[in-house]
Image 1 (cartoon, rainbow, N blue to C red):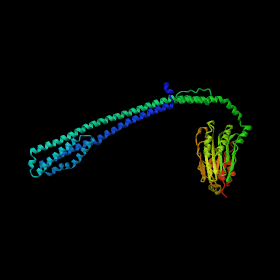
Image 2: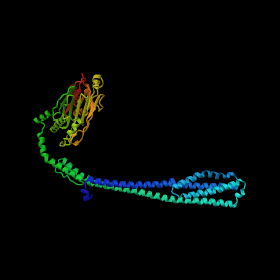
Image 3: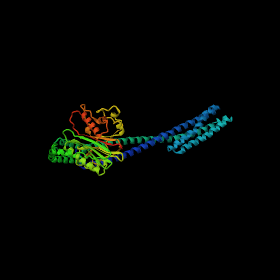
Image 4: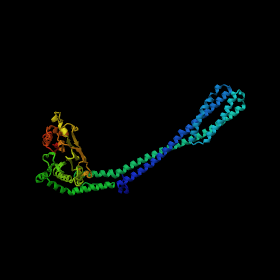
Length: 542
């Protein structure tokens, strides 16, 4: 394919799309107006033909037939003097007013000169007066006078006048029908030509647009993608061609800048990774810094445990932060990955979120504020966070979740009905995911996980009742995703089953049971993720 002309190559893709869209829209509007106008004209012409001209023609033919029936009935009566022969005349006289009325209306709606139908009606009225006089004459016994040559010639002349007037009406209708049919044919041809023109034009637009998109976007992006894959495979000297639309060239420039930055920072990055080996005092300091803020509020019992993964420095953390005498915030976070980078990111989130909550922000606002500060974080580094605030004065639990596994609110009534207390059948760990049992309410995410990709997102804060005896059970995905030898996950049902096994309201015993059940479920395989469980129970009043 030959290269694009210079004006098209320098124009921005957005500008070209806008201009092309405006041109296509104008074309569609013009074509639509032409098609609509032609279709309306065709509809009017067809209606004139079928609803007026055809009706008038049929009515005129019926009128002539009726006139002939009248004349035939009169002639038969005068020849035979038998009243029976007047039947066609009588029937024609009865039906003729309606027929002439239809003819007058349809003829006028067809645009015909009304005088033609008026002349026809006048000629018939004159003949009708003659016919009634002849019938009266024959009925009085003077049949010879009614049959006389003079009377017969007069009747013939009067009826010929009717025929002449009817022929004039018929001639006008035939001419008008011919004109209407010609107009219908012309409009049909115009409509087909317009449709063909629209189809051809749309075909040209689609083909031309596809060619432009291929030349300005698809082909340059494919070449850029090949160079980018080579860079991703480690070839930092790979060519990153820039061509096509201005936006594609800008993208290529940005990708080259990213490659150059990676190349320039490669040595520094290797030194930094070497300095953050997961041994020695730095690791111990990071683990200590990730320790929880362990604050309390009267009327709430808190139990928590964090079991680090084996042999790695991971990114789970939890905090309980007193926000007043009656409010306690629980923060549970999990940074993706392992090692020093994940631990440093977790430490950063831990302190940023605690600071935001202590300044009076609710959970959703705290997540939104901290997310706005993550522009420097690599897109592949992310974390899930659950922030739940218990207000004992209001009797509520407000929470915001950044893609974190759904925590469980357990009502006091549900604890009383647990299988361990009631002797019911307990669900087995590893069963397919099912909704929690009655009284166990999941707290689904209220927004995406924390990452530089979602900067500008605003997390929602939801509210749930939290009365005396109610409890919050929260955990990280390391607990949920423990797998047995068959590859089945421990899942929410495993957590519910382990919690229901404990015949006690003691939070320490409950979280120990959940942690132990998850670890047993995973067998002897090394844990590759932290296991963190937090339980907050509102103590009964009195």
